[in-house]
Image 1 (cartoon, rainbow, N blue to C red):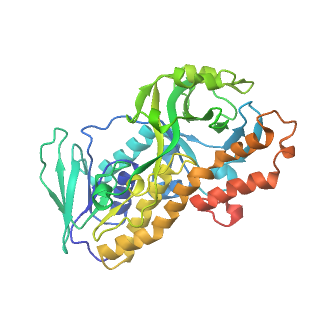
Image 2 (cartoon, rainbow, N blue to C red):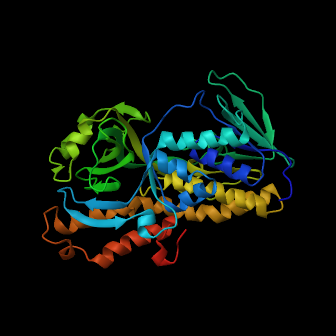
Image 3 (cartoon, rainbow, N blue to C red):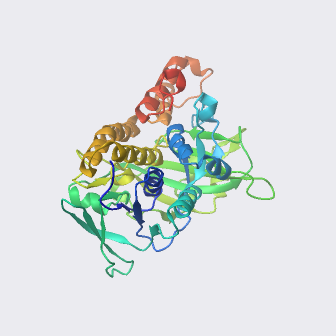
Length: 417
């Protein structure tokens, strides 16, 4: 595209929106970012940046900072609820990828992106306290209307296009897809962080157990955080909860008493899991939801990106990764196509099916689902040798299948990012 007839309006300054702003700026395309929150707070817990997402962030010049703020993930280890090792899998550069996998606190990633946007696009590039309440478009552009936190109207903003990066509760998605509803999986996550000495390799992501008996994901996201050189360890517990018991408050403060019973036994030579959970600074509750894939994201000069387009359950470390890939793809199409409308349509064609496949895979094929297979075959009983339960080829094939769907197959599979 030779020239835009106005700025790209980015609605939402989360991971997807800020990455998009950086991609657009890098491509010489003007944009402005509008965020509903009145201030930027250190929200969330840990997440993983997969190698293909890190490839995009490397091109944006952010890899060194993210490696300094987070931890380069070396491996995944999958354990039964009894602490027996099922599989050990290298990750990122340790698996032959060109780029690392990085475990990081969401707040550290968010601040790295926000600092880069303000440094490159200007200190006023991100306008806070602008809650999108509507938008209209015509042949020449898009007008977006906002209010502040008190509900008072802000001045409308005019641009060449509007990209909705406004998250799982997207106002823009509701306008174009009022029929879309979040789907509750039937399980709830409890999330927290704990200061703890290094365990295993010091850069290991642990998967332990199954939902039926209590499932845990645990990995460090910051190194040497105090005089004792402890790490900040991120952990997620997932348990079944019927829909009629679901609390609708998102990120509700909770307590380890809600789930610790499932892990009272979980003290192993490599880690006292129950002690880590009990030592958490705070615990938050979050329902496991996604959405049936939409038939379309784009309407003329308006489209969706990230969680606004494809809410997915946080399994396989793909939520932030797919938003980052969306941002890169959208920018590429804006450079390639002759019009905004053609670019947004091409972006949808490139990304809709790819992300829909990940949404569906996260329901049944996420990497840790292999533990469900082992639990079923053993009846939860200890095994003498994992090879008697499941073969090495089946273990490897399970992980490779998910990685192909998610778009970061290992180099040996011919799909290196």
